[in-house]
Length: 282
Image 1 (tube, one colour):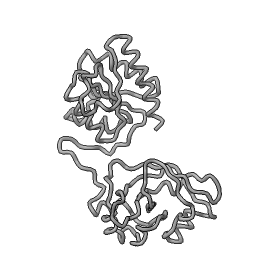
Image 2 (cartoon, one colour):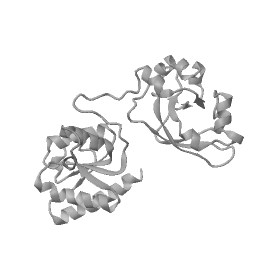
Image 3 (tube, helix red, strand yellow):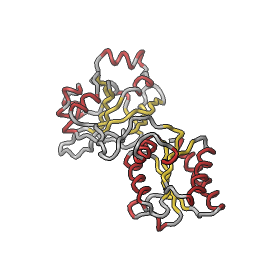
Image 4 (cartoon, helix red, strand yellow):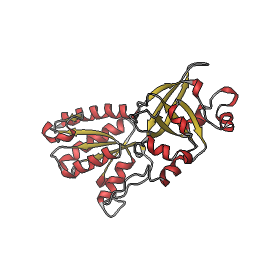
């Protein structure tokens, strides 16, 4: 089953109100009874279902694409009032054009006229099975390494930096920052699970909640790993000793600059700990 959320003015991440009067339209009666027993929505059960966020099809096809995501919170402020929705999009599933959804409407249990009416329905269809059969929602597979399906460890910080002795005090400062906020810190040379170190690094990035990348010295390996972390949608914290270490493509992203001395490491630890606290709350 999945939530079908159709909106006349599209969807902006990550919250919006939705009219109660159009809730569970075009939904089988048994599903309405199941998810709105006694007139009150079972928000916990509804939020367990994946969600398809779709903009109504406009006359000139100028609507934005649909997104697959999750309803993270459904709140009602009182009887008869709108639902306040909070949601996230799945970064691993690319946007889907309305024209493609229209082609798949029979498999998805969607009537064609539903694309022109704002409403919220629940469809008794395996959304992901339909999309996979249609060749949609499949994450590209790299050729050099494998992406794992390991769950993200909310307390894990991965550190990407050159494996040189002069960076040991930096790593120690980062470990202290992570420990101070109840997280653990690892870097590629802390583990040996695969024959190729790049696979260990990618697996570490994939499992980490936050990835810290030290761009000092413009190390090409760290640049490569930073790109992987960004592509996988991880929270990335960039650090560097000088502005010249930060390449043009990421210069617009905020970074933490530090001095390579005892005072600088202490300041770095304080700033990183503050950032980790912020990112943990997301």
